Every structure is written in structure tokens, then in C-alpha cells.
Amino acid sequence: MNAKPEVSEARGDDHRQIFTLQKLIRPVLVGLALCGCYNFSDIVHIDHGHKNNFKTVISATFRFVCLLIMLVVCVKYGVTLYYVSYEYKLFAVMCFIFNLNLVARFVACLKMTHRSYGNQEKCFKTWEEDIFPECLALKLRCPVSTINARTKWAVIVASGITVINVAFVEVQVEMYPELASLHLFPLPNTILIKVALILLMLMCSAVYMFPQTYIFALNTTLTSLFKNLTEKLEQDICKNETKFPPNFQRLRLLHLKLSKLVAELDKDMGWFYAANIGFGTGLGVFILYHIMKTTMDTFFLIMCVFWLLTALAEIGFAATCAAFLHDAVRILR
Figure 1 (cartoon, rainbow, N blue to C red):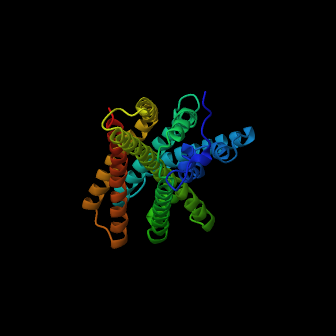
Figure 2 (figure 1 turned 60 degrees about the horizontal axis):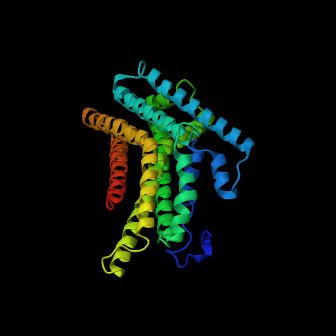
Figure 3 (figure 1 turned 90 degrees about the horizontal axis):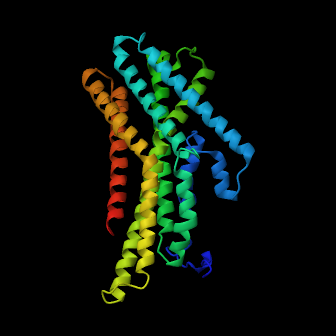
């Protein structure tokens, strides 16, 4: 059997090593791990190639605590529906729906990364053992720098929206006393509690944004590889004067492996798409109703419009990325 080609054989910016899938989207995985949606132990595995049992336990404990906190916060906003004034009743319902969305996303992340019920680890392993070596052997072009730049920009945008959301909540606490009691319930309005609220909102906003970023990074990365595979096949056919090239069977087999990888990922992504379309649509419609029904000052209106656009973008980006990926999959079928 022929030995697998070394990484050093790949030359040029677009012909360098096709990194493992985790390395290509590593910034997104780090963001997911910081808000409890991904295992820290798996980040260590990406960097050092081995897993530490102690860090695995710590990571699992951290994720369990994050889930418990979000469940408590969701129940808290549900309780506030019974005592908040009529003026802010719609806003309280909106906060409750938002937190239900967060819990659904977090549970989807737990399912995705679970070693028995999820498919993520299996897909990463398939990439490393089957797809990665074959891409190198076929000298398939992979725009690594483009993918890295796109992923970093996605993380920057997600981080920026996260900070803006936290700023909006903090301004609410300072400007509207009744909203302060809504967010801080049942705790007193003190400096220490406000700092804890900021940290909590950072985590919740990150849970809202980074799964979206993960879907975007993963889908665009796979879409790029499918397009490059199609281009290489077309170029090889042209060089052979419309005849099937010698490596046609290997290229076709690689396409089938990538298609199977997408099918496996869809078993987890389907939960995210359901949460995006279901809660995103519900939240967007309710925010729009809140804007039309309630008399607001300028700040409150800007905040609600921003959240409305975020909810609509949540639906649009996920659906668009998924559509582009599945369109790229079907080109060679």
C-alpha cells in the first residue's frame, strides 16, 4: 500500500495542509466552551492530542452548572410574569421566550457533543481518518486562510452582538427601576448583584450567539470543500478531453464520504434548525407585536428593533447556510 502523503507536500497558501475540522473552526469551539456548549477537554485534545480525565470531569461539571443556572433563570422569568405590571408584561413574556430558547439551544449542544447520543465526535473522527488523508492524496485545494479569516470574523461579530446585548440589559437596570427588579428578582439591587447579572447575561448571550456561529462556520467550511471538489473534477475532465479522469472513482468516493458526513451532522443540526425557526419566528413576531402595541422611548425602541433584527437574522443565516451546503452536495449527484 502507498504511504499517506506528508503534510509538507501541500504547497502554497491554498495548497497547505487541510487541517482537522476542529482546527479549522477552533475559535468557534473555544467560544462554545466558554459558555458551556462545548467540552474544554476536547479543546485540549485539539491542541495536545490527548485527553485528561480530570479536565473532562471539570468540563462536565461546568456544563452541568451552566445548564442548572439557565433553568433557574428561565423559571425566574416565568415567575415574574405573575407580579410584573401590565406596562412591562409583554417585555417579561419576551424575556421568558428568549430564555426558553437558550435552554433549547443548550440541550441541543449537550446532545450534539454527547459521546453516545451525539454525532459530532464521530464526524470529526471520520474527517481525520477518511476525508483528510484522501484530500491530501488528491491534492485537493482548500482555502485555509479564507476559512480561518471567515471563522474569526464570525466570532468577532458574535462577540460584538453578545456585548451589545449585555450593555442593553445593564442600561435597562440603571434606567428603569421596574425592569431592574424584573432582571434581579429575587435578589436586592446591589453592586455585587449587578456584576453577577452582567456575567450571567454574558453567558446567556453567548449561548444565544455562538451555536449560530458554529453552524455558520461548519456549513461554510464544508460548502467550500464541496465546491473545490467539483472544480477539481471539472478541471480533470477538461484535461482528459471530456473523458473520465483516472482519479474519477476516488473523487466520487470522496464526495460520497463528505455527503455522508453532512448527513450525520444533520442529525444534530436539525435540532438547531428547529430551535432557530421555532423560537426565532416566535420571538421575532412577539417583539414586533411588542413594538407596535407599546409606547416606548427612543432607547427602548432601538433595543427592541435590534433584538427583532437579531431574531430575523437568526432564522435567515442558519437557513441560508444550510441551503448553500445542501446545494453544493447535490451538484455531483
